[in-house]
Length: 55
Image (cartoon, rainbow, N blue to C red; front, side, top):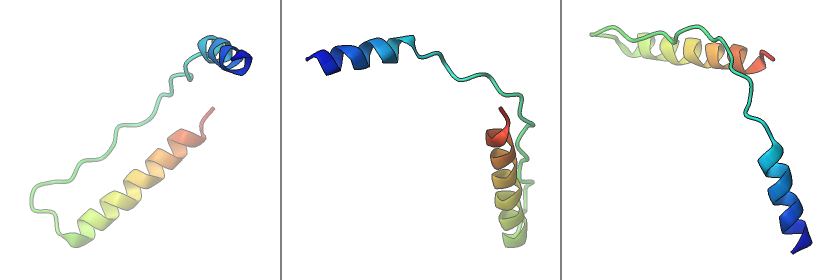
């Protein structure tokens, strides 16, 4: 019971994560082919990784 109470108190005091200013994600154009989709996935994953690495 005591452990649950401590967890609730600590969880309630935790602040939300800091807001990050990340670039807009790219969009696929109409008529995109397989190579365009693969490149889109690569670029999007890179943007997510860079944004997540920022403090």
